[in-house]
Length: 266
Ligand SMILES: NC(=O)c1ccc[n+]([C@@H]2O[C@H](COP(=O)([O-])OP(=O)(O)OC[C@H]3O[C@@H](n4cnc5c(N)ncnc54)[C@H](OP(=O)(O)O)[C@@H]3O)[C@@H](O)[C@H]2O)c1
Image 1 (cartoon, rainbow, N blue to C red):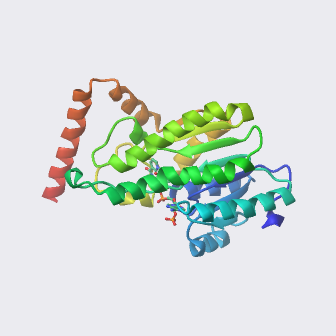
Image 2 (image 1 turned 135 degrees about the vertical axis):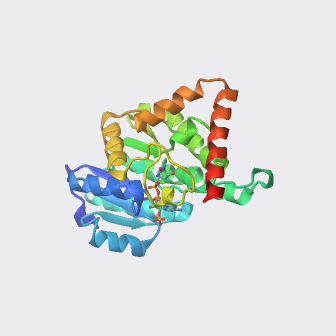
């Protein structure tokens, strides 16, 4: 692994690089000549990617929800980086999952715990492990979602986890300023990936992973505090959030009722 890392070339670490947005980011950074440290939890899947779409990347497999695995990986990575005098210029904590609460009255607290653990608590494990490997002037990017701008039905767990990430990033940006480490929060609208392929509802203004990767890379390069896209969708949500609650509640409820009706007719 160490031989893949050398001085003067930018290095990016991406979690959740085995699929969707993370995979596209890893591919695009590789194409730009960066050293890519592609992280995923499935070693077999990563091995295959290392021989196909991620040739030249350093692949690390660990489960972000397992604090010990995260710490162990970071410690190995730290040794590797110091022996090759390489630094983590960009860290993108992208790994995440989405599950919906189907019956709020019989609230699934295990689902809630699972989603918060993967999307928020695990981010804390990654920060604890990888931040010490980031030098001054590095950029950290945390994956949130445009779901934080307005509440969506059934998204109690997902939305809460992503709202937590937004606050985490904002607070970190204050505290890491003294270390000259920039912090971005990423808030995508709907992006076509295996995660959204499971959704059984309409996803307006959905974009592909190429557009998502470009927006994220440009935002990171500029050091944007908030990277949100597609703008036509995220500005609409932001605008709606300024309306009185009863107005956007009615709009969202009417939309989900219409979709439910369409579903029963199918
Ligand atoms: N797609 C969208 O519309 C959208 C919108 C807003 C925000 N996001 C966020 O963007 C991120 C990427 O989503 P995506 O759409 O690209 O989904 P995806 O294709 O399902 O990719 C998710 C990635 O996270 C990894 N992952 C999940 N749980 C993990 C764990 N416990 N340990 C290590 N890796 C884990 C997955 O690994 P495996 O390959 O092993 O499953 C996969 O590489 C997520 O945080 C998601 O919430 C997505």
